[in-house]
Length: 288
Image 1 (cartoon, one colour):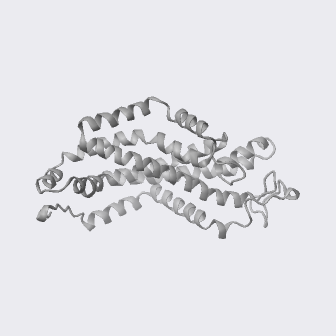
Image 2: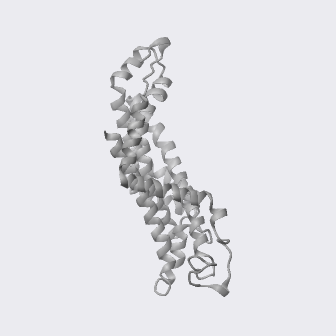
Image 3: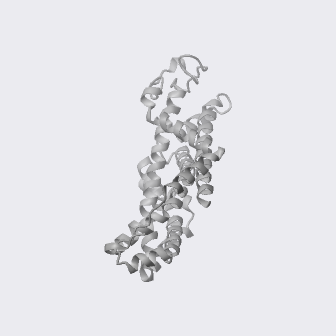
């Protein structure tokens, strides 16, 4: 620990980081989730190279084709390649989910840190805003915002991020208040650290691991929510190959062509499950 020149440096031993990685990888469920996430990410990034055909190409002469060499998973009601649409759907679903997460964290982290660190009237004001947000069901509030702004994925991302930040701001405030009373924080203050150093070098650094766990666990919920909004027509719009849009397109043919809903539904379940498994593994690894 170095107190020179008004700076407090709390080194993190390399052995601690290695031990954390070993504990995480030792959990088979977390490792399985991580492998699936990496596979989905590579699929999403390599969609232009992996997808066998144009996901938007319509050919009514081959509608409802069975799986084969040309169409890996067959075609839909407009003759579009289902496999290509699923592969591109991974890119859209992950991109939109990460965008919502970025908006949420971009609001909740500064708000929670400021409320917990400053206290007083600032804390009271931010918490009253949070209380108002928590008093209204998030789904209905996001629904109202999207309905007012118009159905589009941009409005949906903004609406979800601006609505879902409140519970995380409260949690970050609590962690900040607890961390602020720790011995190393008092030592940093005594050493003459500025407020900026206290917040960004010490507070944010030490609450970062729980925030990462929160983000990993939240991705699954965001993917489900985006698919739900797109399913009812308030998110991404056809013909974009997004998983929720594919579910909406296939519901008309549930009786005769159930695979149109089965494939995107299974992908949503597997993706959400993988993020949940990885997030739980992170949480359990951090506890020890």
